[in-house]
Image (tube, rainbow, N blue to C red; front, side, top):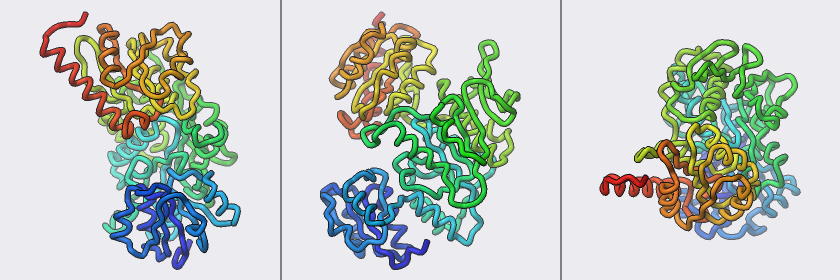
Length: 471
């Protein structure tokens, strides 16, 4: 796509929006930028560094959309915005950063790199990082980008400027990014799972799943491999005729090309077909869901024809990512885990289900319109007690009241931590896995985690200072 001289409106001035502004200017486009916030994050930078860009802040107004050839939309701006929908009805194309990235690969005179694309409700950041680490261990020149950060166009510009063209791009893709994507042409792609999330943006699960399934779309000949979770009916429904599918799941693999798990006494083995690869206990990331994440990453890498041994070596070395089942401390027989990145019900169910110990669960926040009834079974089986925080704590309590598990409320994270410590017994786990967004109480999930960790450390210091057991 030749963008020279095109008038393109970039909506949203976060990291992705700014990356699109910079990329489009490099392509010779005439760029406008707009953000509905009065003072968006990068408005001063755009004004200073890119004076040719017409910048509009505040509520979207009709003149901003006049005379444009295309809209480049940031993930945080809904396609359902009335101004965007009016432009769509007028035949104006709406694209995102993944489309611009794909066009760049098509137009490059350099050899086309492999593209691996990862989406799903939960685990996609971990699987993206795992896959990148595994390919690097195998000697590949790899760039990991997308929703995981950095923005894919920022990474692309850095690679071009450095004259360092990667062999593979490993991309984490969100449903918001995929809404406008039709040409990713991934050599291997996966949707790890589907659970209720972002239903404050989508009309229902069907629309959400439809957005996720766009990760498999191609506008070129050639069949990219679909890596599918065979235990998730919504994901299985994304299988496309004529495409190669590889599956993974918590059960044993149905064919030699698939991936799964086998219990052998007290050991849990990762399998490729009938071949035992490694014990789950050799992983440095905790929980059954992380064993499944490892299977997905293996399937993606093997779809590219990579030898197995360096992949397994990389999995043994992989330490996980911050705020995803991250061990914070252990004292008085109680272990504390930070799983603040679990911002939806499915993620918290996975975290609870992967626990062998009794759990004191800290949950709650901005529920995003989710159905919290899906927490019941995991809470009933794995939780000793639940401490609820945040705006929608009462809604969660309404769904959990008949689970037979005591429910407690806390106004602050510090209070939640104190109550959890008093409720925990030796051998228990205190788990922050909110199943909610954080914005009702915190700046973001990282800030929420920082407050939790500080509360744990404060309790640990007091415990050892007094030298007394609470039990």
